[in-house]
Amino acid sequence: MDLRRLTDEVEAVSSAYARRNGITRDDTWFLLKLQEEVGELTQAFLMRSGQARDKGHSTDQLEQGFRSEFADVLSQLLVMA
Image 1: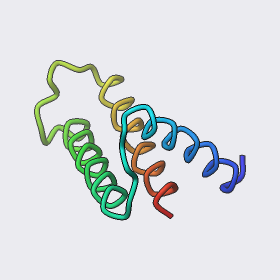
Image 2: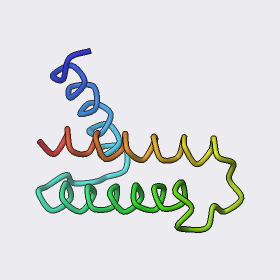
Image 3: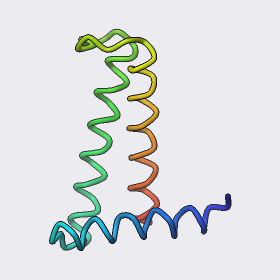
Image 4: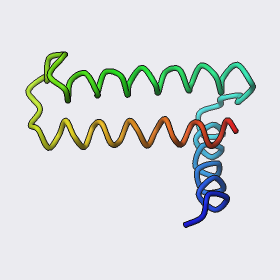
């Protein structure tokens, strides 16, 4: 998959989510949403690396959580760009 196609698909999901939930996606929203996602990635990274409590998650769950949060950050960067 090329970057343009991926960006278009992520934008479609983000736009639909915003419409469904009455969210106005302006410059402030894009930046704050990116910050939120980076915070969640940080938490997942710390849990995965043993630097935060694992909340009872298995190693596989921690890895999947990290990957999911990483994808969220990438997605937000794509829609912001």
